[in-house]
Length: 536
Image (tube, rainbow, N blue to C red; front, side):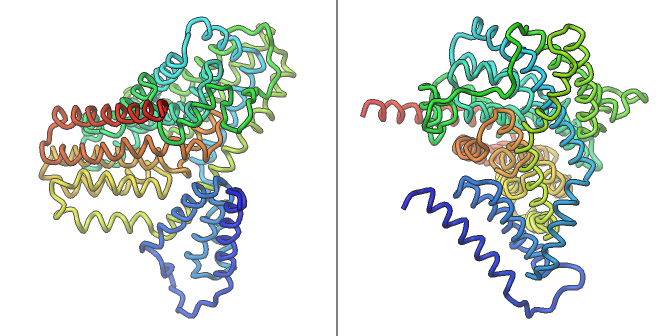
């Protein structure tokens, strides 16, 4: 029996089980306000089902849908009519009518249009030609991607799609697999944003710290944010040592032979639009610089900068969704004016890029919508208060092991729900309250919460950042998740040990170097195994 048939059978089996469950009569008395499974372990089952199926079957859409259906059934105590209404009204319609989500979708569509304009004008191709003269190797192409990802630290969504559109021609030129590009994008998105004081992530974290100086705590927590810092070490080490392992090694080996997608055949990295052969690098730089500048201005505008707030306070109070949508809309207008004024492409061709840009983002929009709906199902079952109660009840007894345990809980919660910010909102207030009398341990525990949330977000196939990274690299989403998972889990394991050390030493000067040494040992071991396999 082929692997494909096995996957199809597993999907049909789960779907049949779910359908059978809808037919089972429920004899238990229906709760008046809360579902019977509210704030229990069952609240975590829908995302576990979705994630497990996605990794097993390599098919993300049906996996998310099945997870959503399971969540709806649990919420309605297996009443089919109530389940359907909950999924449609509170899930899909509720997610698509949420102002934050709509702002992100607008940003996605506009960014897809800008990328289409750059490709049509020949800017991406021209940058690829320029990069070919200055970036001479696969290592250089990957290091340039990492550098650009670290420089665009304002917002993870913005990072994913901008780095992807700029660096794709360069990494394609040097036969870097799309899965590896997606990993580099993802690993320089949330992990970099969470250690950047001026970012939408810093603003989110400071907003969850009540009764304390949130920005000051964020700054003091940076040296203890081991997952983010060690992920950067991991990326650079993988590239410099050429020490890829796990599924990523197969993708990279195939890419060196010309197959960037590990499809089994050598295929070109197709650009959907026919590019202007006379395009210049300016046709890429003008849109990108406009986008960066306008998005920064848009974010501080929503934070009240032009009403008298300081730059830092404006970032702390900013609405990233509105700011990015506003900034990208202005950047789109500037880009069209530039294209038409310089006669690179005419106005009609610019307008033709609008539907093309939208079509390019449809897969990401669909996955995001399903992921948001799954999160709504999880929220309606009380997953957040369930985890919060566990942490709160055991905070006093965990003592110096708390940072490491908080890290694991943050990983699990963010992985299951696909959101870092929601994890911040649940765990940070508990940590601040529980360790108000031990400021140093509170800082370490807050950093462990942030690191765990980023780690879970980084691993989760239903995370919006992970979805954006796949869209930015134009990589298959499940391929991206499966290839980066061994790397993320390696860093997570080292981070856990490092938090154990930090809990006892309360010193970043001791614990962080230990973590760096462990990461380097992992990479050297991977390289040693790789060399032995090559010689065999």
